[in-house]
Length: 190
Image (cartoon, rainbow, N blue to C red; front, side):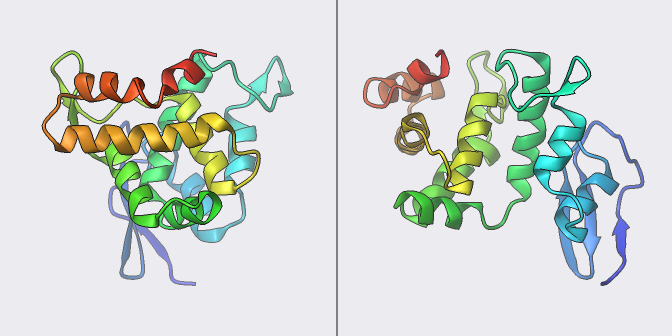
């Protein structure tokens, strides 16, 4: 295996860092150390689930498989997971295979949710704030196991919302129009 070299030497910086394997470049999520990222994505010695169990899911000295969706731990998980999704290369195909959606539509949804910057409700231009519930949905959709109704509603919601945004509606307007048809918020509150 070719040696890995970090382009930026900081291990625990608060921004994404670049990494290089041979001629291929990757982004290391801000919430992961370079070593953790390498183990999961390059060396394959530690699965994402193992990493999460070790770093996120410790509750009162014991491991828990679930987080309170409104907890700081869930928020930290969502930030980490959104960063991981941005570095994934096969998630859209897997979701398409697991749901029957067209792969190009899943790519559109991924771009809308995880990459594109939008005018947010406070007027700031930025990516959407990471959501623990959406992160969980995305993971179930990738895995193709235990896919819930809310996961399919999420895909439909984000696809339609992206169309409204492309037509010139603000994010708030697009979201409100979409909620009338695909009410993901009803699931997210539950």
